[in-house]
Structure formats: structure tokens, C-alpha cells
Image (tube, rainbow over all chains, first blue to last red; front, side, top):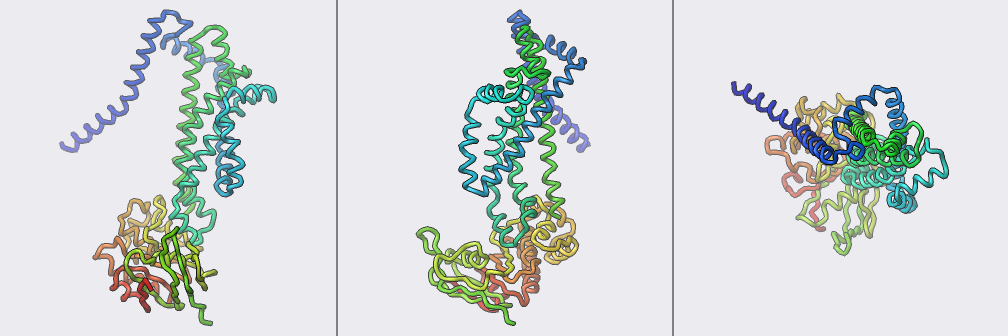
Length: 264
Length: 195
């Protein structure tokens, strides 16, 4: 009897915990609905129902998935390239002060310069189809570089010293000490970087009016004063960003297990 | 041929303006255990770090250690928290044999069920035993043990001490300890710092 009560108590707690974000979401949708009623002009602020209806129409069109695929591919390429280049650059900077001194001004410049400056410059150099990948890459690169470098510098010094005494081979040390030490910093950079990649990538698509992209759909929404389309595509962007983040963090959670298997 | 002894000659070590010790001479005969004892702050651990090549003397010389294969039990366990006990030991071995390492850990008093747990899930005493086995499993020319029995409870300590003594037989080792009984139990020679 006692164990049944305990189990049902736990189940209630689980439902309560799971229900909290839902309650928050319902609250904000209600606020949105109230604001839409107050404004009374669909072209200024579409209601949640109108947006959901529009989204439901969009997902059943072939063009929707083509557009999603177009932007997703380029933004993921930009993010992945930044993750690889940022990590390698940070590893080199950690190993060599000369590299660190050479890269620091470049990274600071990229981080500080407005994203539109890069977009306009890139539009002069290349066509708009490559824009979102390059802009995502440039925006994510400083985040990856800074976080991974911080992670490398915060590795456990006592473990590294022990590895030196025991002459642990380099690749084994990387797998068992370096990667697990840097991974939390890399994961944090991924969380920030994915959102940044989507924001900057779609901004680039809007400014460059990249043919077949989500940015072009947003640009058209502005042209045709369609806030339903604007909100519907924004929901799509938020959903894609969240899905990308979930996928990347899921993959990263598997890394320690793989490292462990390699060490045994 | 008798291996060359490890020698510290007129060694001085400073950290900033603080002189840890000055003009220290010490000889470690091959195949013997030397215990370093003395009060806190006299530089016992620093001598160990010099012998392990982790510090350089500010003046004087440490000879006979250049090509040595070294192993250590540090004051802290210094284990990879996410790896299990066996993986922590195989990590430092040239040939990785889980079964053999498992037997060694069992000899040091770890139960079979604890061998495959990440070491962060083990007790302090169990982690200490993993650190001890790791140092003794390596075919090292010099073993430095810095307060190796700290954190072991009174019921397991005698068995672990017996295991360590057996594994140190015929090897060159330095035992750093506050405990006179430990020094007497292990050492062929006891050196009290400051010299």
C-alpha cells in the first residue's frame, strides 16, 4: 500500500513538472490572443489561431519542405564548419602563444562587427545562395573559438601532470582527459551557436533575398503585409533551431561513453 | 651492471621569495625504498616532484632520472572520474589487459562489482586503492608514493600496506609520509627533512 502511494506521488510530481512549461506556453498564447483582439488588425498582429491555420496550410505544400531544406542545409553547414574550424583554431591557439596572438584580433573583429556589415560585404563578393552558410559560420566561429579555448585552459592540471608522469600516449590522453574536460565548454558553445546560426543565417537570407530560402518567405511576408506568414515562418525557425539543438546535445551526450569505450 | 643511483646534489627550491629548502643532498640506491619524513612545509612533496621531473631545481642538480620510467601515487587520487577503476589503470599501461588489472585491483581489496563503476561512484578509500594499483602496475624504474594511505580506513589499511610492500620489493621507491610506523614498515632507509 505504501509503495503504491509513493509511486502515485512520484507520478503526480512528474506530471506537474512536465506540465509547467505547457502552462507557461498556454499563458503566453493567451496574452498573444488578447493582444491580437486588442489590435483588431490581422495585418499588424495575426492571432495564434490564424498563424496555426496558416502553418497547417504551409506544411502540406511541396514548396514548404523545399524551403525548409534549403535554409536548414546551409545553416547547418555554416554551424558545423564553425564548430570544426573554431575547435581546431582554439587547439592551435592553446598550443602556441604566437597563434593565439595572431588569431585574437581577428576573432574580436568578427565578434564585434555588425552582422549586416558582413552580409553587405559578402553580397559584393558572392551570390546570395551561399550567404546564409558563410554568415552563420562567421557568427558562430568566435563563440566556438572562445569557449573551446576556455575549456582547454580549464582542463584538470593535476590529471595532465599525472598523464605526464605516467607517459600516457597523446591520443589516449586526448580521449580520456582533454575531450571530457573540454566537452562541457563545447556543448555550451553549441547551445549558443545554434541559435546564433539560425538568427544570423535567416537575417542574411532576408537581406540577400536568397531564392528559395526561409528568409525570402519572410521578405515576402513583409512585402505583402502578411503577419500570419511572418509568424508562421518564425515558428518554423524556432522549431528548427530547437530540433538542431536537441540533436547536437544528444550526440554530445554520447561522446563520453565512446571515449570510455576507447580507453578500456 | 648496477643501475646508476638517483642523486640530488645541493638542490635549492624556491616558490617566489619563499625558499622551500636549500642545499639538499639525497641519494636513492637502486632497488631500495627510501622514506622521507618530517613536519609539514619542509618540502617533502617538492622533493617528490623534483624526482618525478615535474619541477626543476633553482640551483643544484638532480641526476639519474632523465630516462627513467616513473610512476606515482600523488597526494590527491588524480583519477579520471568518468572512467572505471580498470580503465584508470590500463590508461597508464603500455599493454592494456583488463583481466590482469582486475585481478590486481581485487588483490588491493576492490570487489568485482566495483571494478566497472566510474570511479566517481567509489568511496574515497576505494579510489585511493585504484591510485595505488595504478602506480604499482606500471613497470617503473622509480615509484614516488606521497602519503599513499591517506583516506584508507583502519580495517583495510593493513592489507593494502602488505600489498604495497610486496609490489615494491626490489624496486626503487620514495615513500613520503608523516607516519613513523609506515616509514619503518616500508623503508630500507629513512630520511628526515629538513636535512
